[in-house]
Amino acid sequence: QKEVEQDPGPLSVPEGAIVSLNCTYSNSAFQYFMWYRQYSRKGPELLMYTYSSGNKEDGRFTAQVDKSSKYISLFIRDSQPSDSATYLCAMSGGAYSGGSNYKLTFGKGTLLTVNP
Amino acid sequence: NAGVTQTPKFQVLKTGQSMTLQCAQDMNHNSMYWYRQDPGMGLRLIYYSASEGTTDKGEVPNGYNVSRLNKREFSLRLESAAPSQTSVYFCASHRDRDSPLHFGNGTRLTVT
Image 1 (cartoon, rainbow over the protein chains, first blue to last red):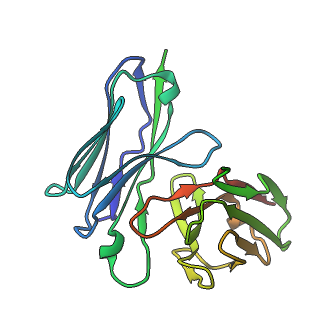
Image 2 (tube, each protein chain N blue to C red; image 1 turned 120 degrees about the vertical axis):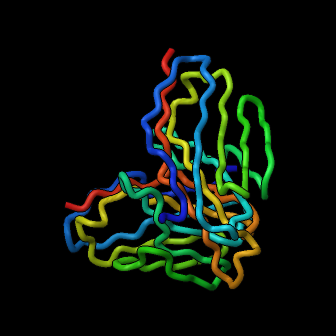
Image 3 (cartoon, rainbow over the protein chains, first blue to last red; image 1 turned 60 degrees about the vertical axis):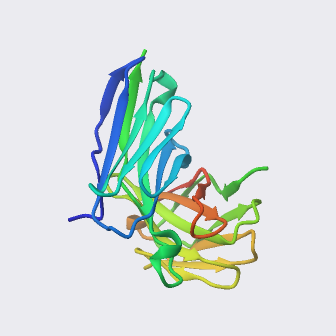
């Protein structure tokens, strides 16, 4: 089983739709969970950053972490054409990883297109 | 505040040529990373530097070398480029292990 699984899509939705993006993981040591957005020919940019379980909301974006199910989600409300991008989940054990190595594990990304 | 700056943006090399990819950050971050991104493979860690003066191998270090020149700069060198090194290379940095990574906009390298 891969450490992080993310459906690559592509996902195509009409403008205004609610989008749900998901990742599952197998490593119970993961404590920090991130979502990055990557526009074509650009670097990933941090969208949401959460620690442990629970929800975090920022404008139209909500990140959910369910550590018991090893499942994280990103919801986008009232989706806009400008949300069209690849969304990458990422996670790490942070300071709980142990040792001096930092290991951030990425999903392979989901390509989202929001159609006007 | 430029964040993470990578140069060059694009490069074409012939097999066997060498080159250095440059990365600089102005956020006073301690740790810096080099990733490559390939279709269907996602982001893979090549090398990282947890702090100035230290470097360590990531998942895919073969064919690469790095130098942490100072706290701001972290370069990636290809000594003898191969077509398998055709990829998009991203540099990233962060303050510590509990903080998220900040990425540059990448160097698109083609090796023919």
